[in-house]
Length: 464
Ligand code: UDP
Image (cartoon, rainbow, N blue to C red):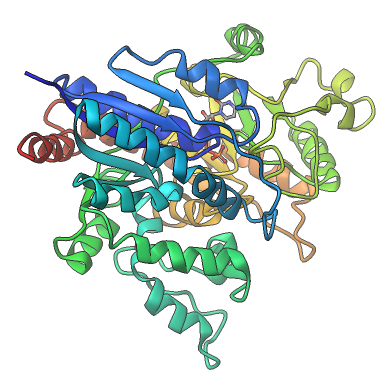
């Protein structure tokens, strides 16, 4: 019998490619009767990390790189989501062509698109396929999408007290400063884009989220109650890579960690493209040094745009921007690697005892899966929301204080690093993170909540 096919459309950028493909691998692992074809939009030449990753896919996933597009007409280059969405929209003619061609030669049953590739959902209707959005993020973020009309009313109200946190059903109350970046300028293009995108969540048959019941039960239950049936909501996480691939610094990081005491090293990383200003970069360097704690820091060249490294490969040597003499002074205390480290292996190493993270959702899930407590350092997108969730709700993270100019000063950095990496203060945080680690492992066991959810969805695909 002909294998049922699922077509998948990620968005450009490593962290919108990997999650949806890891989801595809998980679906195939549980239900080998499917075949998956993935159409990958790209901007300019794809980063080597994306290419290296695609080469590791099993033969049951066919991946096709679409002709790369150029982004000459971005209305606001500082809004990453818009850049990503535009690049997918410019690729829509290629996606349609490939999808139609696939439908003519295979039994395609469903189309799964990344949240920023929602423009492709229209093709599902045209070709009579079931359609799904894959949100590689939290139920709390999905709540913001589903409650966006109500939220917009609250935020636009002139009588609103700015200090009063906002209640989103099932979630920890959100302070203004912790709302996703686009919410900080209600007349900006980023916010308008968010509201537009939120309408698209009513289009598909289902929405997958990379979270699990035991992590966000309040938000998931409240959403199910609010959405009532369509789209169906599927918490299927935690879905993360088994191991990081495609980097030269891997061996150096792991060999260095092998020589360190258990739980003694703070891993410092701002995801696949987060950058700091030169001033903040210096404060971080001095703060780490001042803390006296061991660290493994993945450095990226400073920039005035927080997401500067996201879609383009790094061209400058980031080590050149470190304070004078830093490497020499800290050579016994820390290891500094340029641009990339094998994060999954680093977090899974027994020497790693803490993670100073920009709180991208993948990084959050990876620290939960490995049971590593966090120091939150959100930069862009919905990272501040994730930071609020893990620090204020789940209480598995510490938040450094930011001064009036938006800077985290070196003394504050040293204080939180000592707090997390010290024995006493971090004990409770560590214990709670340990419990989440167990819950995460349980969710994806054979009879776990996320496994059952995914199987339920696969059954409905088979009957289509
Ligand atoms: N990553 C990595 N090495 C690095 C930086 C990032 O392997 O030096 C991986 C990390 O494991 C995670 C992803 O890149 O899977 C980053 O995703 P996240 O959602 O945390 O942040 P984003 O890159 O989207 O800002």
